[in-house]
Amino acid sequence: MYRKGAQDKKRAKVFGKLGRELQVAAKEGGSDPDSNPRLRAAIAAARVANMPKDNIERAIKKGTGETDAGGYEEIRYEGFGPGGVALIVEALSDNRNRTASEIRTAFSKNGGSLAETGAVSFMFERVGEIRYSASAASDEAMFEAALEAGAEDVQSSADGHEIVCAPANLHAVAAALVKGFGDPGSTKLVWKPRSTVPVGEDDAQTLFNLFNALDDNDDVQSVSANYEIAEETMERLTA
Image (tube, rainbow, N blue to C red; front, side, top):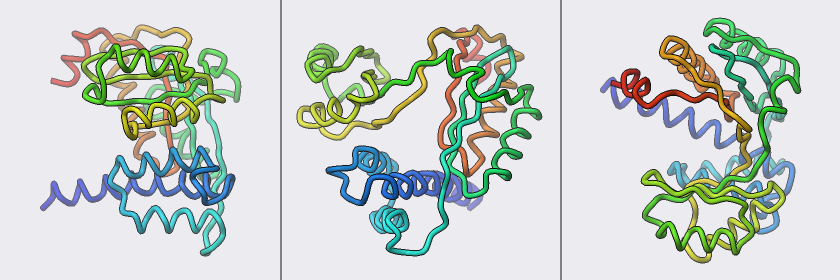
C-alpha cells in the first residue's frame, strides 16, 4: 500500500509539471498543436508519461482561457552546486517570491548557492534535443535520417538515440523523424554544457541530493548541470 501511494504521489507530481507546460504552451501559441510546436512537444511528452487525455485537454483549455486558471511565469535560475558544478534551473511559477525562496533554500541546504542571471548560462549552449529509444531504428538509419532532416549531431548507444539541432530547427527536424520512426520519447530545448566539471564521490552525493530537492519542487520544470562523474563512482553511489 505504501509503495502504491508513493507511486501515485510521484505520478501526480509529474502530471502537475506536464500540465503547467501544456498550459503555458497553449497560452503562448494557441490550442492547435499543428501550428504551435511548443504545444505539440508538450502533448508528446504528456503522452509518453501516460497522462490521461482529459488532463491534457483540461490543461490546454486553462491555457487558452476557456476555463479559469492562474497564470504561470517562466523563470530561470542560475547557480553553483557542490564541486563548482554550474546549474540552470527552469521553473514555471504563479508566485515568483515563493519559488525564489524555495530554490535558494534547496541550493543552500545542499552545498550550493544561487548566482545572478547570466553567471553560468555562458557555459552552456541552447540546443534542440530529440530522443528515441534504441529500438526505434538502427544507428546508421537514425544518423542518416537525422542529418538529412537538418540535425547537427547524432549520438547513439544502448540507451537510445540523441539528436541535437539548432533551436529554430527543432520542430522541423522532429516532424521529419516522426514520419520515419514515429513519435520520439522527448522533443525539447535543453541547455547543453560546453564543457564538464569532474566531481568526486563526496561532492557527487551532495549534488544528487540537490538534484532531488529541486526535482521535488512543483515549480521546477528542468535542471541542467555541467558535471562529470567517473563510472566507478556512479556504481558505488547507486549500489
